[in-house]
Amino acid sequence: MPEISRDEVRHLADLARIELDDAELDHLAPQLSVILESIASIAGVAAADIPPTSHALPLTNVYRDDVVVPCLTAEQALSGAPASEQQRFSVPRILGDEQ
Amino acid sequence: MTTLLSYDDAIAAFDPAMGLEVHVELNTATKMFCGCPTEFGAEPNTQTCPTCLGLPGSLPVVNRKAVESAIRIGLALNCGVAAWCRFARKNYFYPDMPKNFQTSQYDEPIAFNGYLDVQLEGGEVFRVEIERAHMEEDTGKSTHVGGATGRIHGASHSLLDYNRAGIPLIEIVTKPIVGAGARAPEVAKAYVAELRELIKALGVSEARMEMGQMRCDVNLSLRPHGREKFGTRSETKNVNSLRSVERAARYEIQRHAAVLTSGGTIVQETRHFHEEDGSTAAGRIKEEAEDYRYFPEPDLVPVAPSREWVEELRAGLPELPSVQRKRIQADWGLSDHEMQSVLNAGAIELILATIAEGADAASARKWWMGELARRSNEDGIELAALPITPAQVARVAALVAEGSLNDKLARQVIEGVLDGDGDPDTVVEKRGLKVVSDEGALGSAVDEAIAANAAIADKVRGGNLAAAGALIGAVMKTTRGQADAKRVRELILERLAAQG
Image (cartoon, rainbow over all chains, first blue to last red; front, top):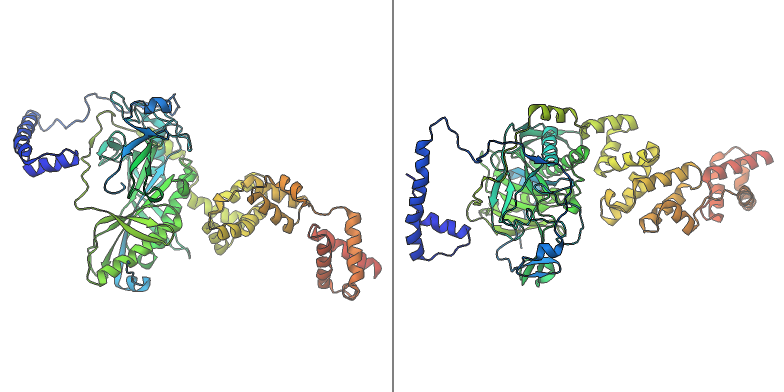
């Protein structure tokens, strides 16, 4: 049975940039375990001859031609941005290092 | 202050292993997953759509041409091509990817297990094994505001332009390169150079490193001779010229060796390369393995190139650079040494393009390897980056061939073009650089020179033809270099023979 530890939940929260305090961790870790267990029960149904799938549709090779289509104007592109400057999206100071 | 061990001492004690990761930006008209244009230098955020901005409800669709380019790169690198593979999400939070993930490939790359043979100076061939080549997308461009000179450190906020986000990238990863010893940095440079030639020959990218169309990460680690296991590696990011690739590898070998011999340990970290002095500096420390939580991209169906398509693409591969070089060397009648200097200068394509514009091979080679190579050295820029086109060089060669310019004037014309004075014909006109072809004016200059140098003229009359050089020099001086030396020599010899 899959079990997710408190430390793993803390790590996932870090990766998702979600701050969780100890009480929240205590609350969420067992819940996530239950969810994982429920999903894992599907594995019991799938026989060995059923491979895992990532897509619901039995399709491959869906392509488009390399042809330019009209795109958004800068105004449209920036219209949903909380802040912009010099026709660019403005984001808060980036902490840590450059990727 | 970083301590370095001398390169010789480092190599005497250690064996280097390198891994090279090269990103190539494809020259498709549109992005990897949407129909936005990919033109360089467009106004910020004018080449975006809901898909590449990661807006809710948008769906990516794969660019067939990008897949084709990826397969062709794989085939040219002697790779196997996957019969079935998927895209994957690489999850990370960074504003250069508005989706909060980069669509990439993870454990199912489109091409894998290949090799590229690279030739080193002196003719030895070193085989670099390729681990994989996979498809992904480029990120947006950040500008950091408020800190010192655009650095992220101390910036108050950052500005994002997503024109580049979603442009198709192919990442080509080598297997660990071992056994090159002292020549490891040279192998690194030769590999990236060969890869660049290959990419250009395929026509899938212009692969201009100075424009970021090709970028290289250099991973390096050392092991003491006789030991099997290599030490911790460092990853030097975005090393963006051939020379820098060599310098970065060399620097890291010396730095690692200094740390290890003094009993220290190498920290696993990314490092930034500094172009100015060839050093690297610590960046982000990797406390734990990167956790990108890759998973198969649910919005894109698998890519399953048919074997027929792959074979068709294989059959359509162009002559590869290593084969082309052998043919060219034979065609142009160059020695190994001459060929090597043409290669080192990155001049092959420029010379070929100049020949295609009508110049003969010898003069095309002469100008690129002479005057222009000298200027590129002086200015510290690559030949191809000089502000002169093969067509312009061909025009200069044509002017020389028809006798309107001599070599000296031609050099001045080239200088004029490089200085931004326009096309060769414009420069000729502006600067009054035409060979004096007025036979009358030339004739009197010759007569004057003979009269002024009677003793030398006598020597020539006496059969000492070498002495004519001094007379030619005198004529060139009075015509301020604007005479055709060959014609001057003919005139001098005619006159002295007639008088004698």
